[in-house]
Image 1 (tube, rainbow, N blue to C red):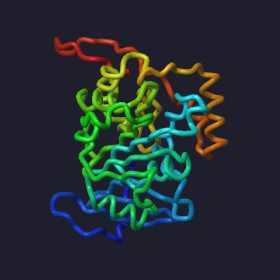
Image 2: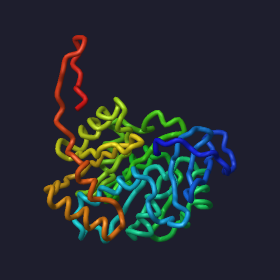
Image 3: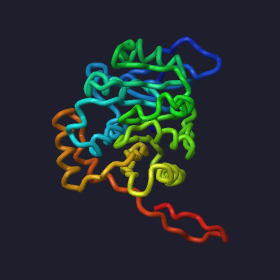
Image 4: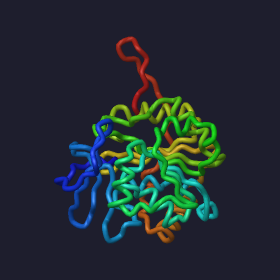
Length: 278
């Protein structure tokens, strides 16, 4: 979910009283997905380049590539929690050529992506599941199955992540294979950002969580590794250049914006100990 204002909406999927409708708009060659009548953009696709990643924060959701050696880019299983406009799912399926699973609660979003956002039907490498993300990650049948887990779970009100507690992140950790990486979209300019990042750190461990500076719209990506040996800066830069060459993603600046989550400091406020948001 991107923090940008919506264009006037022009198409809707059939309504469902229990969930917001999937709403579409187009502007300057880009098609946008919205939920209901809110001004938030849930995803976007450049119509003439449907396999490429259009939004800045969605591109940065691919920064997990920097935490894996290039030899590991050849194959794997990528899971997306929250389909959005299917950008990450299309990219992992068509560009990476990985086995891909997308978990989306709203069937209207799946229908809109199939009709308007070039999401192909399920096949031997693609499985789009209409399900609750928490239930899916808590299902032990899905544990130790994903090499990459991309989490972008916002509702139509966009007040914050729909799932953002330690139990949820603990289940996400269980879904990952050893050496796997989770990428989470958070609001980088929100006071809640560091609290969310610390919840992730409490599960994945100190030194296993990286943050990327917010985009102009305020989205910040957090990366969390399951037993990842973080590469040195020079190696990160080499991998970033390889990502740019192989996948046409603007990866080199990510290295400058990417930092291991700093150790917490404490201050006393009104007789209560609170973490200083560093």
